[in-house]
Length: 234
Image (cartoon, rainbow, N blue to C red; front, side, top):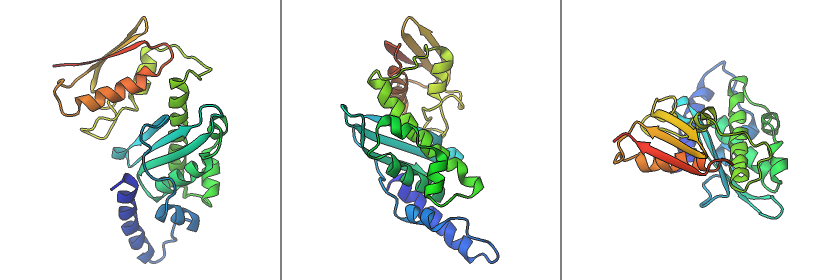
């Protein structure tokens, strides 16, 4: 079962409880509920041209966005999302992907969280971050595509700070938080186009291959990085 399906079940049970509570106004608009119950573009694109992951399930909300891009026109031909979170998280993932499909990359980058919220008829103030998360997931997928295809116009030199920012988007499967916050990274270095990352896990750990692949994907697309070395402690 996909993230969104699991969360739909959980949130549906929560909604039933909320509706039964007397004196409490139900916080979601009908449009939010429609996108929650029947989300558009749910799923994962195999071999996507770009993908982005924002948030953390341990914090309550996470969204992954996948895009397919027409290489000549730079139009987003297909876009899908996976969500782990509340009704607002699923609904905003649904509406953001609707807004992005058929747009060029430059047009899609201009989509804002306020647009998403307006399309949904508004969100409870405490849930506004969900629309921000979905937009950031889309932008991350676009940035991933642009980096892989040499389309980045503002070429920031890769430093250790840049590396650590990127590694905040690599999840530690042991905790559900990123590998920086969980102190899984012992050391990083950048020298002459080579990035070296030392991970505090044995090389034969069950999650080592997945973590290595994710690190190499996040760092290898940087414009001035020629090689990524991922070293495990044992």
